[in-house]
Image (cartoon, rainbow, N blue to C red; front, side, top):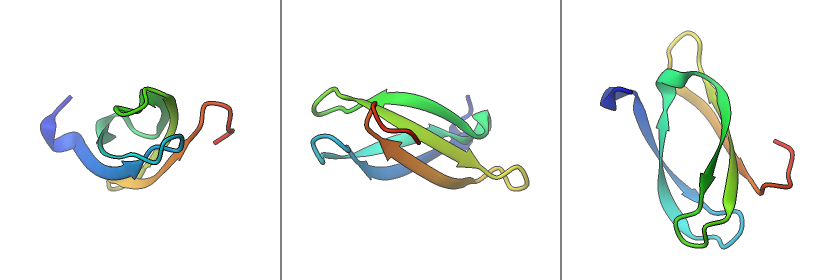
Length: 69
Protein backbone atom coordinates (compact mmCIF):
# COMPACT_ATOMS: atom_id res chain seq x y z
CA UNK A 1 0.00 0.00 0.00
CA UNK A 2 1.31 3.40 -0.97
CA UNK A 3 0.31 6.57 0.83
CA UNK A 4 -0.47 8.27 -2.48
CA UNK A 5 -3.05 5.50 -3.14
CA UNK A 6 -5.04 6.44 -0.02
CA UNK A 7 -8.17 8.52 -0.48
CA UNK A 8 -9.74 10.10 2.62
CA UNK A 9 -13.53 10.37 2.72
CA UNK A 10 -15.75 11.93 5.38
CA UNK A 11 -18.58 9.44 6.06
CA UNK A 12 -21.34 8.81 8.59
CA UNK A 13 -22.11 5.52 10.30
CA UNK A 14 -25.42 4.03 9.06
CA UNK A 15 -26.13 2.82 12.63
CA UNK A 16 -25.27 5.64 15.06
CA UNK A 17 -24.79 8.52 12.56
CA UNK A 18 -21.30 9.30 13.94
CA UNK A 19 -19.05 11.08 11.46
CA UNK A 20 -15.52 9.82 10.82
CA UNK A 21 -12.75 9.83 8.22
CA UNK A 22 -12.44 6.66 6.16
CA UNK A 23 -9.17 5.90 4.38
CA UNK A 24 -9.67 4.00 1.13
CA UNK A 25 -6.83 2.24 -0.67
CA UNK A 26 -7.73 2.85 -4.33
CA UNK A 27 -4.77 0.72 -5.49
CA UNK A 28 -6.96 -2.33 -4.70
CA UNK A 29 -9.40 -1.35 -7.45
CA UNK A 30 -13.15 -1.79 -7.09
CA UNK A 31 -14.11 -4.08 -4.22
CA UNK A 32 -16.44 -4.73 -1.31
CA UNK A 33 -15.23 -4.84 2.28
CA UNK A 34 -16.24 -4.21 5.91
CA UNK A 35 -15.15 -1.55 8.39
CA UNK A 36 -16.20 -1.24 12.02
CA UNK A 37 -17.59 2.10 13.18
CA UNK A 38 -15.04 3.76 15.50
CA UNK A 39 -17.90 5.01 17.72
CA UNK A 40 -20.39 2.12 18.08
CA UNK A 41 -18.25 -0.74 16.65
CA UNK A 42 -21.05 -1.89 14.32
CA UNK A 43 -19.94 -3.59 11.07
CA UNK A 44 -20.33 -1.26 8.09
CA UNK A 45 -20.52 -2.73 4.61
CA UNK A 46 -18.54 -0.79 1.98
CA UNK A 47 -18.79 -0.97 -1.80
CA UNK A 48 -15.89 0.89 -3.40
CA UNK A 49 -15.83 1.66 -7.13
CA UNK A 50 -12.51 2.78 -8.66
CA UNK A 51 -12.08 3.97 -12.26
CA UNK A 52 -10.14 1.53 -14.43
CA UNK A 53 -8.87 4.45 -16.52
CA UNK A 54 -7.82 7.04 -13.96
CA UNK A 55 -7.50 4.88 -10.82
CA UNK A 56 -9.54 7.45 -8.88
CA UNK A 57 -12.44 6.77 -6.55
CA UNK A 58 -15.71 6.91 -8.52
CA UNK A 59 -18.21 6.00 -5.81
CA UNK A 60 -18.49 4.80 -2.24
CA UNK A 61 -21.59 3.16 -0.76
CA UNK A 62 -22.01 2.41 2.95
CA UNK A 63 -24.66 0.18 4.43
CA UNK A 64 -25.70 -1.88 7.41
CA UNK A 65 -24.60 -5.50 7.52
CA UNK A 66 -28.11 -6.72 6.61
CA UNK A 67 -28.44 -4.46 3.53
CA UNK A 68 -27.56 -5.55 0.02
CA UNK A 69 -25.24 -3.08 -1.70
